[in-house]
Structures are given as structure tokens and as C-alpha cells.
Length: 124
Image 1 (cartoon, one colour):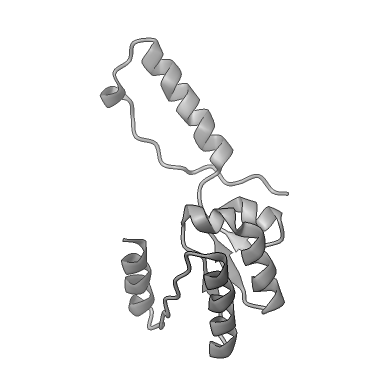
Image 2 (cartoon, rainbow, N blue to C red):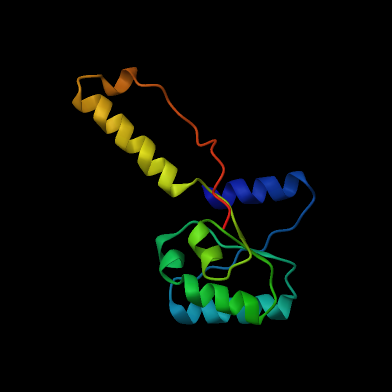
């Protein structure tokens, strides 16, 4: 679903998206080689647990190849990545704790309001 959303968004602003897939460490190295050959303007690293476990490799390769890269988690930026998007993880856990407490006190989960993340991340 994320891929379709990204492709649709790119088309809506007249941009071309090339999709490269990686599921091993070697695939990541090969993808960056391909990005360099393509002279890619930028890279968006998809939300994926595998990519999160390879954060250091991704950041190092993006820096080495001078490819501006957007990551899905703040942790990539903490170790040297360019920019990230997403929710404030600590705030999300705090809200989860508050909701769990309300449920333990007897409130029905279906009666609790839906909250969207709106709090900005703290500055480093």
C-alpha cells in the first residue's frame, strides 16, 4: 500500500519514482550502486523492520553516495541521516500508557477518542 500511495503522490506532482527493492544486506549495497548509476536526486527509505535493523548501513551508504535520503524514523537522523518523518515515538508511548490506564479504570476502549499525532519532535 505504501508503494502505491507514493507512486500516486509522485504522479500528482509530475515526478517519476523508481522503485528499488532490498531484502538482504547485499541487496542494499546493490541498490545504492544502482542509485549512483541512475544519478538519483533523492531516496525515500520505506517503512520496514528490515531497513530499521540496517539503519547504520543505509546512513553510511547514503552519505558515501551523497544521496539526500528521507527516513521513516528519527533514529536514522540521530546516527547521521539527513531527515526523517513520522510520529514522536516517546509521545505515542505516553498516550498509549494514558489510554491503558483509562481502560484499566473501567472505560470502554470504543468510547475513547481517536487521537492523531500532532506534537512536534523535540529538537536535538
